Image 1 (cartoon, one colour):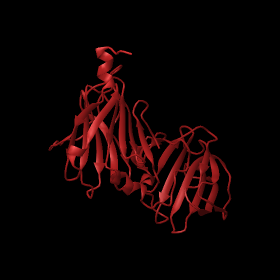
Image 2 (spheres, rainbow, N blue to C red):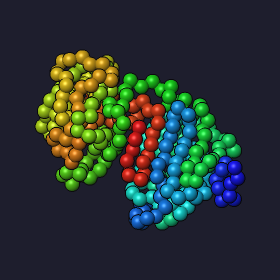
Image 3 (cartoon, one colour):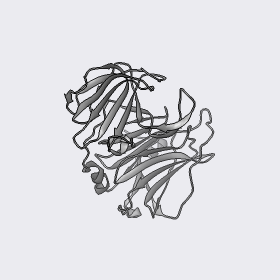
Image 4 (tube, one colour):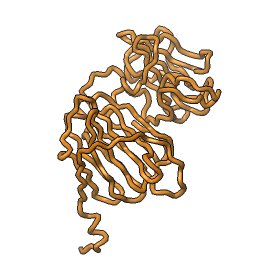
Length: 295
């Protein structure tokens, strides 16, 4: 079977070396452009220690490695990112993924690594076996740092799509700027909510203050997890539950704009922190086409 010159171009694996350089600069928000070429997904697979991303139309990415702290920077010329700058915390090897607009015609992806991680830029390659789909293999020891990290907590919902992360934001109902103390997982009403770790139910049912129906668990080391806006609650106060046990189902009770799970972790039993720093992850997907996150 013969191939045209055009198809042969894509059958050959393309390699793009990354060079060490002193590239700097912040990320800005770009104005969306209709029908523009765009970044569709950006994936970090911890099991394979691999980065993957897909584009609506193919282009040649430009890669670099920055030191102090170590960051892998991938620029996509001609790719317009439609949305605000996104930063997702990962763990202790790869600390975070970041996507944003560097100028009117370039999208930048940044893989931020722990200060303890050392990279040889000559060992990194961007590869493409088909138009618009690129991968980069990271050293296995980087992902192993996160996979081997001890975590007592698992994601409390299957097929999770993060609709709002931890941090300061303008509240979608009140319009006030306030700290969002958890992570929101958007899901259909009735989707099961699971206990993130073994614990004892310290509160269950309706609560004032905007959270609607909740379940609150206290865990062995004094940590507290909170599950809010539930449609139905399956457990009662004082009950012991196991990690992965269904404790409620997704709803939109309380101050809510749609069905979702609001999930909090309070390591000291009082103050909420970013749950993504405590959850066991094996793959992180930034779905830029729909402006959502998946784990």
